[in-house]
Length: 503
Image (cartoon, rainbow, N blue to C red; front, top):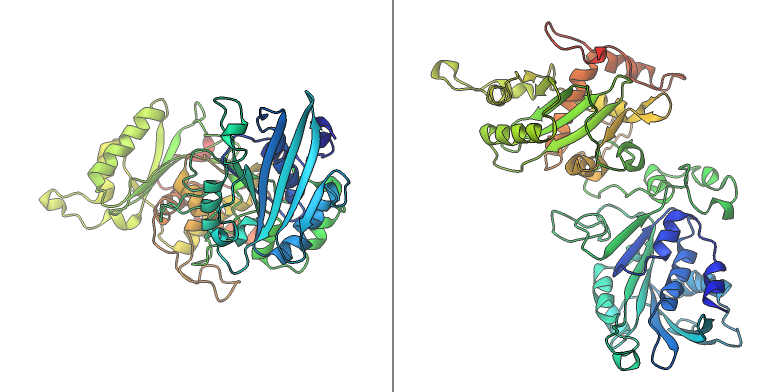
């Protein structure tokens, strides 16, 4: 079988899977997809495509050695090996298979490649079980490794495998000056956000999302119910619709929608958030001729968000300012002014809103200013206190934006991807302190005060002022009524306020 036939025998389930398979340059690459997304077959062909891309040895043979690692060999034999044998039968006369039956196995494949070359691809299959990976693969040297269902393994497996690749074939077999390449690939269903694959900025442990190192690549397939879902041609037409029946929300979120699961430390405030829908594919630039509005949160960990409300009712979240801890109002004002001058010099500021509690505590007779006054003076624009600090009302304003669509196709809120803290907060960081005991009472528990809550407070203040109290009540009452797919009610105004819906 030629290299061309090898690659043509496989029809990629979709563009994400194909891009993953043909990435020969990343040291570590991971593909996350829903059940039925074709990840296993994609990794099978990705491993052999990488093998075929190896440099040719001095004798004209292309040599590759890889290892497929699973949490247990019994699971690997029942699932991964079964799929492997569908494409590469173990009884093929030109190939050699040894081992199996609850013990490590080796499959040696041989192919003819263009240019009268031969590919010799050796693949080992191991299960870790209750042992350490170094005990299983002590002294192993190879070209590539595949972590099958990587979310079920510990991070140390990846750390060990990256040490053992790029060691085969030996340099004495390769032409002068040619180094053996190497790669670790991984497939997995969306795990909980606490899984090592995601990474943790707070713990400074890099993953495929947080702190992704150079040379690592992350490929996320669309969710099973998204219009661009992959591998549908190989599944029953109602595959996902039937699978969703009777499943818990957390299961549907991870295994069908292909979204990272909830943190074990608390439920996200906005489970309605969908990164594929609510985060723009590229950084948003401010729309010309449309004024900006700013929401702020006070204290020693202040935050600000900059938004635009478009004439069609869509809210664009353009920027965030999250300077961190121990930042007083004067320093915060300097940073905010610098951001505005850098990106929004040509845009009018029509509304600045802040935490209502930050208007108190100053001694006007002694010349002291409240937090809102200090920031307002620096901006040359008064910072109005939001008309309420009621958490449930504030959250509901953002929630309605997340669940509304403009003309049935545009999300009610679209966040720029460089609003990193906001996006992280939506996905997992902005959460209730304790798991809810009553799923029908979403605001019973208090939102945790952490690094993600401050920009979200700022967003809530500006959304509440732009939308107004009565439209939120009205929209909540109309929830689920057919034909209502956008927020288009006028804002509640105070005398002298700018009417953001008249632009």
